[in-house]
Length: 434
Image (cartoon, rainbow, N blue to C red; front, top):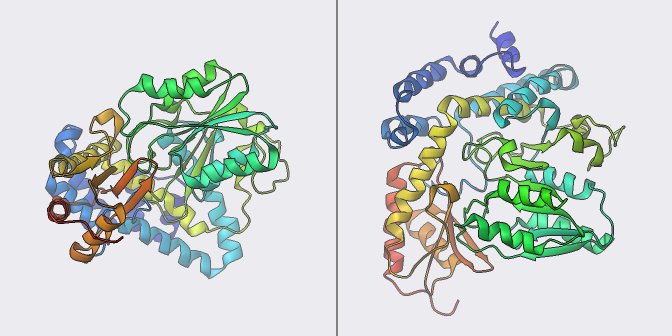
């Protein structure tokens, strides 16, 4: 009965708490109790309830010896997601070709429904893949563009995507038009105008990164999309860092095409992602990997990956349920609270350089912090060597600082230690000769 219930859960036939209970009854009961305690609080009040978030921290298996403040790169999974992954993996190994292809493969439709509900779109517009790079490359290389067609994009877009566009430029002669977005980003009209002024009658695509991963600044994608559509262009949105971090539905972006990495802020298994394409656009995109009917209107033509990690894929459902039970608005409020908690202290340090907005509509968890005369790599190495705090050094265009990305399991002690470390660094001379 336990196995049957677990398999029914994987197919999406049980609710969030029921699915989590099928994996770990004790954990699900504790989670329900904790959530009930904050249920009547505002999201902002719940964001400061350290007892609740302390319990959430205990749901993860993070290292006690390293303070991980690079959750933006890839997030750890709560133990309940790890357990689901392991159970599916063991199940597959009993008879792989049977249990993977005849049983678990059927669970994709239930998972598709769960992700579509979370994203606020139709199941016929969502496909499940391995990451944002795969999803966005599918669209970039699958579009019917010809020599002379123009694409507008930003110098702060993600390298894998910029390289994909550069490859099309080199091979096919499309023209890339680059814009430089101010960091921080705090005025919608300024940003929209930058994209608008770069467009011409030959512009076919406007490519936008929803949250700039280098700085954490949120770009007004819906306003950009509305402008681009009015000028006859299609819009691709990179939502690698926004999906699962703050609360929105995909239609809120105005995107024709959008991809996200679920192993970031949704805390799903490593190597899991989704691709969204508006229903009427699917037929126009060629699959990145061969499919029997490449011009089909079926979103599933983009899932023709061959043998895939079925266990990891099915465990995405546990991550969605964990996210839903905690609550998207509570999660967003907590992440923004954590960012503000340390930045508001660090910004007062001598030589502080913050290129991330503190306005709620323009940032959430991510922030980039630098110090005058210090190289980002030196700040990063000093923090790790002395305090075992793991961050990401960013040197790009006008950005020279460490990217700090707390998660739902991060506590205030971690951030106090970060500020202590930055304070010590700010009062000491930078390394010489580097």
